[in-house]
Image 1 (cartoon, rainbow, N blue to C red):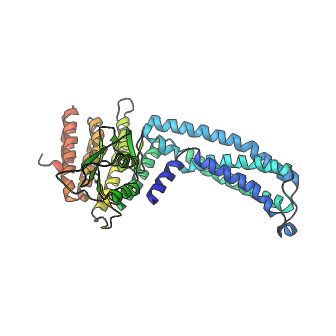
Image 2 (image 1 turned 90 degrees about the vertical axis):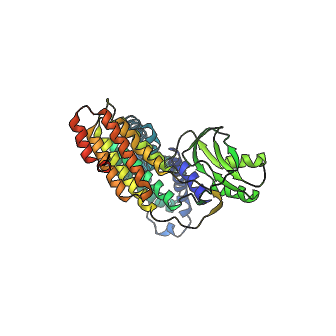
Length: 420
């Protein structure tokens, strides 16, 4: 249940309108709650507030905040366009969900709503002596909050949409997703048991990418039917009506149609992939940025090298933690869940760069050095995958290089292929 709440909240909070709506509600409440100070002990101890001073403060706030909010939206739109043009369109959701920018826009709009509501209430005699004093303090607090937010936002907007910042955002969210998946290796499910008969296949009713799996609902269905559910897909998998999403291991030959429909509803489908539940998506987005940087029109091998460095950090996190056996505690005992294949994450990360950067000696050397680093910390069963990818990158470079000296230099750096 907690995972489902976190998923839906993160999905909702990533919307650009969510935080401004919350701040608007809080600003209205704040503007009206000052009235409750009237009739309390504060009436006898607070100083009188001149109407003109409070009116000037609220007018200044209302006149300036709407303009700043419009300016903030324009700056954010420019940053979104820059991120899509210089990095990858898949980074758009991350830039939109930037906390500092969303908070800044929310506070500007909230301050504007606060000033309008408070001004109307003030001019209609809604506040008494204590209420005016509390409203004055709240207005000063809003001014202070706006100033601090503006200072932080100016620093962030100078980076928002820049290529380096976008790469860092993708790497950071991928690290979080890696850590989450490492902590719950199979999302709380059991490892898959090999059987001659996989069970009754369940096909998808929708077309799109799996963004989330409602494991609680799947467990309830499995317990009610007294069956085992073997998942055949994970968050990030593209499914269609011809794709088996799960197998039901049961003694019965068939499962009621309504139960199959309930099972289908446990798979949350969308048109795009999600960074927050799909560890591989961050690797793919980074490789897209590297491929674009290596295109002849841009010719920026430094960006590809930077992303290869990011891969070394990410792979170290993934495989170093993988040495520690997952907790034997299984929350969803009736759900069998596949693990992410090591070969798949290598292909997501390195194959596009080895293809598009095959003719660039600097990129190829950095890639071979990255393979050497990764080889040093991966488990023994993954070392052969590292060698295969190293060999593939070398073969691509061998076909692309026109200067023999470059190939000879690359071969010296390809220590994993000494006997190649």
